[in-house]
Image (cartoon, rainbow, N blue to C red; front, side, top):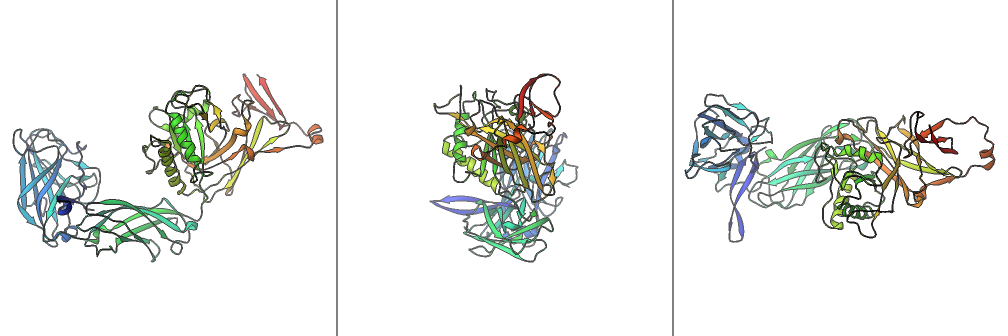
Length: 609
């Protein structure tokens, strides 16, 4: 796809188009050499070129190329730089120009863009394809070719030496070279659809699909609106959305539009579909070049999904002076109308040293940073996911940092990320129930149950984590804390560090566990949080949370057994269960140490072995 950049000049306060750049790099260049594109040969010519096919150039027929922009990744050991126009790579120059690379010459070749005029303008002919290229004489090893990492057809041809042959290396990138086109017949209406992005999953029950597209105006007139026609393989029906968006010359924008598919995609067979989007029907007139107005993407199909509850995990410690700021931002986000009851938080006291609230699991979860052992606080995880809409992330780490500054700015940032995450379908749900025994209330008994809308909604066997957390804990020595600062969402107990693998009965599941209640917990400040996720021991970005849910202490019920039953239970005693003092259940009876032993629903005692 040829990307065209408009050249502008300003007369008084009115901007007018003076020319168009025609190439594949959209004004970009790379300032370092590319592996595999250098030569150690001395006193040889290195050449690179792009090909602009006739179908792309016909819209400029009758106009002329008067200069060429050529970018160098380096000018070290480069003597002369030539630009040229040809109809074949080994053919004669139809037009050319040159500058020197020698010190003291004026002008001289420079690193980055070099605009070089042709000895005479070349008039573009109808139905003629052209090669636009440059060559430089290297006195010794050089890395002059500037290759942008954007592979596309016809974007990179190279000749790595005077006696070498031309090769097509368009699979490696695009050469930073552009033809500058001028004339009285420049295209007036011409948008290019640079890319589209369909959702990873379309849910039939939802009935609508939201698509994001990158659109650029590469002609002289301002465009105020256009249509997006969406076609789908397996159907002859087309869904159309009108986009009212103003695009001036040389302006590009991401636009998002929705289309109704209720009568187009009615089943999940096939489970994988292709979307073809055509940009058409410009408000101002017909697009003069429709060859760059079509893009495709693919997506999966599911019949139905469930409401997504977003899990936000915070890494924080009392030694962290910036943590109170993010804690206030998170609290404001959770209390907002957009997220209240739809997002749940859990705090891990680790990342920047530790403190008196740190649990063993908190340090284990530092693995999720995936930064070569580097950790810090404050830091957030949003469903442990990496996404384009989550700023300050890398492709390999799900760590998220909200906007710095005011509570309002940070809260808005968190809200926006959570809202985008909630748009992604969830294929499992969690219903949490919890109860206490009136006789033995040192444990809270938790049952999590639910269903899945599709099998294999995770790559690895789905796991479940259940946490007991506590709010409103007074700090002891929190750095940079206000007088009224309190710790919220503090992890207190859990079923296991990395969760337990769910067992399915068809598409249903039921999971139970017991979480210990210490005497220093303020019960009215407790809550229970559970989430189902994909645990990939080798790839952190694959460890996404599928869905979550939480209940408060007000939702915990108290079971009152019949007194006679409690006193005259003649059944055989249940096997003893052993837990560490922090509440982690052991698979086997311990050999030595101090542990908590639980037998049945009424016998809990501290034992030494």
